[in-house]
Image (tube, rainbow, N blue to C red; front, side):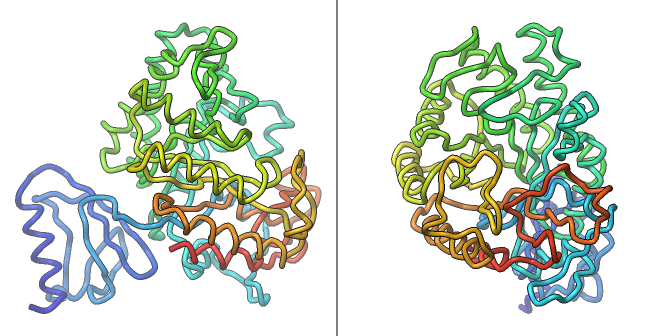
Amino acid sequence: MRKIHLLSLLAAAVLSLSAWAQTAYITTPTAIYSTSATAESPLSFTDNGRSLQLNGKTLATKEIDSITFYLPDVTCVGGDISLLTEYEQRGAKYSTNDGTAISDVLTFFQQEGWNALRLRLFVNPANASEDVRKEGVVQDINYVCELGKRIKEQGFLLMIDFHYSDSWADPGKQTVPADWASLDIEGLTEKMYSYTKDCLTKMKDAGATPDFIQIGNEITYGLLWPTAHTYPGGGGQDGGTWTNLKSYLNNAAKACREMCPDAKIILHTELSNANNPANFYQQAKQYGIDYDIIGLSYYPAYHGSLSTLDGALSKIESQQPDRPIMIVETGYSNKWAMAGTTFDYTSVYPYSEDGQESFTKDLVTTLKKHKNVKGILWWWAEANEYGINWQNSVTSGWNNAPLFNNETGRALKALSQLKELK
């Protein structure tokens, strides 16, 4: 039987088994589309099975590699592009490494082999200070829904990064949102569920259903301080407890399971201490925290050499042998040091385009040694002030580790190396 008929018949047969809505993932050589399908409203094949109508697009059946009713097991390659809308609206000019103008950045990422993009989400960034907003803290739910819809329609997997704060959340701060400040532990527990559910409902309604959901950003030391201010190896500080942390995270996870049952939940930590991630996930296992994927931040500027990362991954894999791992944030400078750099790697990888590319190649080589690693995303990959009036810049300071040259708008060579992880 020819492929065009087989795909359509199989899809119809699976859907006929149940009237419940299922998410169908349609994988092509360059994209992964998703759509809701039911027995009453199945996938729409036309032209005797030669084409599939999908969210306003027409896909040739011969270009479809697979149709699954679960998230396909792929290695994710891409970046966090949470400020792309701001750069585009202010007139940033993007081009390829050879200087050819890029008319659509998302299409270009796809051409470079990327298949996953990440967006951060703040509870109410309007409550953040003006200085912080100038650093890029602008992503409220409406912003995320709009950009997320574009990402999904383009055929990318979408990762949403809940900060559960009005501003940056990281190992040094996990501030309770201003509107939640009066809530006690019980109230915060309920808010983690209702807020997460509300955001995911809005994303689904907007056509921006996430495929990966981070419940917290770099929560090595807990979140919603002080009540869940914890140590990665156990115990709490400032009155925080792992019991509270478990309650908060599991209530967020409950909302994820209900609203986006096909999505994978990520617990995200970082390597400020090489042993922290392994210790954290052991505690998460002991406390029965519900999640699917280990997410890590790794920046040499703050976390050390590739051998440090290599050792941390090996330790995690030995303790969590069946748990997938993704590097959900990474980056390396191409000209100037990243702000607050504590580890100088320039003797191996100079701050230059070639040095950044060389680091990226070696990073990919390191990750490929670990069978559990299933993805890499470059943080703030889209940063590019070229073409923008300096009086209307997107942020108060340049990102020194983007994948575009802020002075020319050209894509840097490291961008093309990420797909080698696949």
